[in-house]
Image (cartoon, rainbow, N blue to C red; front, side, top):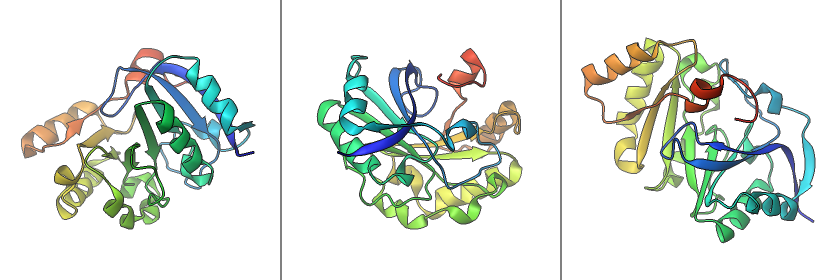
Length: 214
């Protein structure tokens, strides 16, 4: 029987990306090979509970929503994540995957809306970016940059141009790292440069602070 190590399954408002504010079920898988300096889910690095794929889908079903987000840690670090995504897509119409961009995306079900990070210089994990993943992005996918500084911002602008990201995916997301970059500064830089990207804040932190299960 297929199984995964799960840190938590919870129901909350989506705090980021295109469906921000929409009630969503989150399936947080355990484990991550990256150690970004701004990580806010260190509690998902280890521990968790082994659960069958069938059991996971059954719990998700109880919340009666079409919006499901598979996240981590880094969910693709567990090989059976691909099976989970496929099973969720068979039952629900709005399935998204939050991934670091360091794991191969080629096997992800095409029905999934991928929200892929590109790690910036100040993340501490720049070398982990798997740029070959860009070829697997689809129009309904999104690319996210978590920015810690002006250096990160300038680097992100270059990536957007180099890989034609605004034409490749539905949304390019620029997010100020919590307590590392002043959101107002980022907003002003974006307006000054007339960037065609989406500014985002983490809604769940504004509402509930930096804690688990939200």
